[in-house]
Image (cartoon, rainbow over the protein chains, first blue to last red):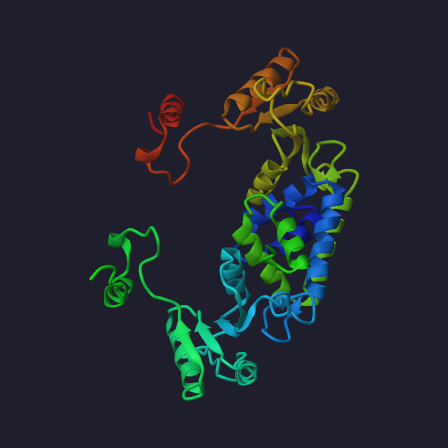
Length: 201
Length: 201
C-alpha cells in the first residue's frame, strides 16, 4: 500500500537514516523541506555533499577539519605541550564551546573495550605516543568519560607514559554544577565526598 | 570563536532549519551524515532536490503528488462521490496508513481562522464547491480537528452546501481507544457522554 508519493517516500526514507529520526519526525521534516524555498533546499543539499567531501580527521590530532591540519593545531597561540585526550569529535566541540582551554587535543576515536572487541590498536594511541615523544614538557589531560571503557583507557594511557616525564591528569569527578544532591547516583556522591576540597582550615 | 570547521558549521546550520532540530541534534545528525557512505550521502542530497523539484499539489484534490493528478484521484476503484475533507497532507497520510477509506480527499491546506487572518478565500474551498457541483450523489466527510478553527471551518462548509443535496458528516468525537478515563479532558468526556452509543436495549 503506497501512502506517500514516490519522491516523498524516498526523502522520508533518507531522513530516517539519521539518528533519533523515526517515521513521524521524518514525515514532519520532509514536509518542512517542501515548504522551504528552492534556494534553501539546494543549499542544504549542497551542504551535505560538501561536508562529506571535504571533512576528515586532522593529520596531527585526529579532530575534524576541512584542511590538512586543523585550526587548533595550526594556531600559534595554543600550547602544544598541553594535550587534552578525548574520545571523539563531540568532546572537542564541547570544550571549544566553553572556550577556556588553550592547549591542543588528541582524538582517540573510541575507547578500549574488551566487550566490544576494541583493543589498543583500534584507537589512535600510536599517534599519541609519537606526538608526546616529540615534546619537551608534555602534559596530558585525560578527558574521558567515567565508564568502564573510559577508566580502562585512562589506566592504559597512564601506564604507557609511566616514567617518561609526562605529566598526566584526569578531569575532576564530583557533583555537576546545579545538581540536586538527592537525585545523584551513589557512586558520584561517594566520589565527591572522597575528593572533597578543603576551602578553609 | 569558531567551534566547527566551516563546512561542518554549514551543515549544522542547514539541519537546524528543520522542525524540532536544535544545535545538539543538528550536531549529532551532522556527525552521523559524515559516518554514512558517500553513496548514501549523495542519495540523501538528491532525495532533497528531487522531492522539492517534483512534488506539488494534485490539481483535483490538492494532496501531495509528483504527477498532474494524484494516485488516489486517478484510481478507478476509489469512490469519487465520497470526499473526505482534510486540513493538510498529513491527514491524508494518516487515513491512507489506516487504509480503510475507499473514497477520495480534498485538502483545504489550512483552516478558517479570524485570529490568524485566514479567511474563506485563503483555503481551497472554491475548488471543493466546483468538484461537488459536478457529482451526482456527493457525500462530504469533514475530518477536521476539533479546535475553534476546525469547528468554524466545519460550520462554514456545512452552510455552503445547505439545501444542495449534499450529505455531510463529521468524524465522531469521543474518548480515544485505550485512553484512561481519569486523564481525559472534561470537554472530551462531556462529548463522549452526550454522544453515547446504545449497545443493548
